[in-house]
Image (cartoon, rainbow, N blue to C red; front, side, top):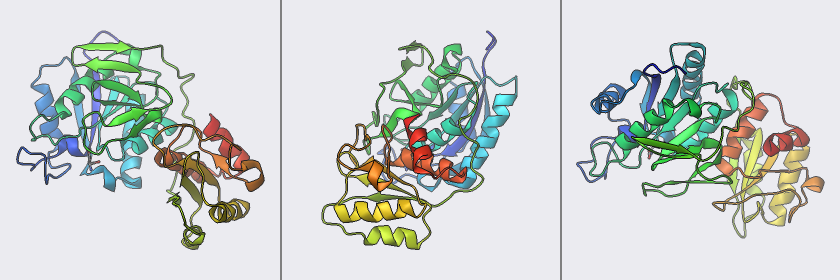
Length: 329
Ligand code: ASP
């Protein structure tokens, strides 16, 4: 990146950062109520030294984000990677599924330039709104040459997080994201940026091609006293992969594990993650993965484990050994 004013492609999708109609209290608002143009206009008024190029992809709550928006974000980001006049990409996004969109892009984009998701917990017209500060922080990160090579990032609450590690863990607090196993990559304010270590990415290639379709991969949450019927129901609707949001270290009642082993034996890969907020799920600790043909999600929670399994299944990777290698990577 040169010393000229950074040129940043801003892709808008909606979310609370563009939320409006809250009457100042933050209650009863519409995510995506404000256009990206208005949002970028507010930011431009701050006089930051960045040339922002807005492109609206959608104006929705991120609970409704799906394949069409993911594909459009991927195509636009690829365009920015190939365009020498663009230095970085910022994606304004709802926080509910930011980790899913971000991780999908992390797996499928050659991130030669910084790609940063940014959201907010309070609508743009609510008292104490956090969106403009998060957005200004994202611009600060996007304009920093040291931001390249760190994978796709999420800027929230004055912190820079690797999306691979980020998990939403509060429904309304401004500091809504926690990271595991690594802590934040940097602390940021609109006027300062401190990285806590060098970039970790090796090479520029994307790990996987972007999926040509969205195979049905379901998350099954384990609960005490459940039986195997939900597993049978998922197979009945044509699930091509299952992520278990298990108890503790990815556990489930014996009958459920046996039904999941039968899925794995029939060619439907099964990944064990945890419904617990944080921690590793390792192989063969309490559950005999080797014998049952199951895969351990390691550091990924259920939502991101599902994204990785979608990408793998879409690329024809369903064998338990190869799926495990991807989760270990
Ligand atoms: N439901 C909203 C969304 O994900 C919440 C948020 O942005 O914080 O779009």
